[in-house]
Image 1 (cartoon, one colour):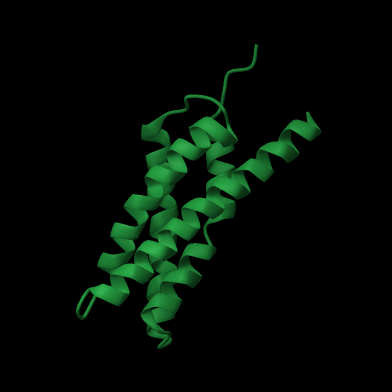
Image 2 (image 1 turned 90 degrees about the vertical axis):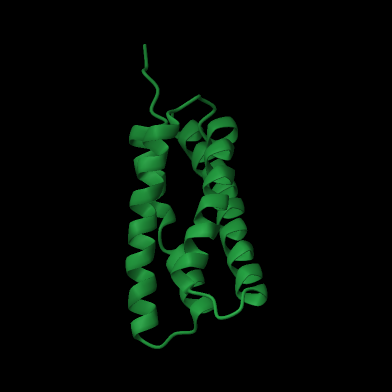
Length: 126
């Protein structure tokens, strides 16, 4: 049981890391190529792209179960709301938009793991 959980956490970190890097790269590209960008709009677009990476990665690699896209979307949206609250705080402190998105994005994975493993991808044990 313990080894399985450790390996699942490791897989979560790999998939979550890939989704986080995707989020940050999409945000960086949009900040670089969009004139006068809104950090919130860019964060939404980056979140949507990263959500797809995250869901399919967690479904096939981390939890190796179909899981519920609807439940995982609720988990991800909850994480995104926390992300935006942190983003708002960073911007209020005068932190640069891209740096604020990176800080906000890096703060959410622990909550996402717990909600995903305990609810969104929970399997019925026999």
